[in-house]
Length: 82
Image 1 (cartoon, rainbow, N blue to C red):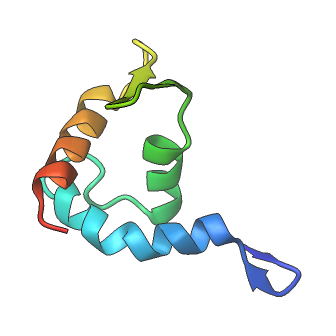
Image 2: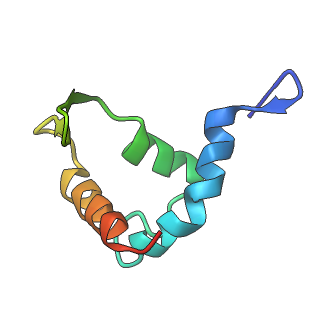
């Protein structure tokens, strides 16, 4: 995934978060998935984002297969120490 001799920024960012993400994906269907699969299934999704002064709302499509997995993953990430 090189563009003019440089790694795409979005892909290199995904590589940086892969290790913490793997920790939270243990015991799920995506625990052994490749980086590109994680990008397609968890990050490259259609969603409607609504922001208020206190919250950010993410509205996922009802047909999104990994809806519960993503919700649990985000809850785990929120609960873990920075």
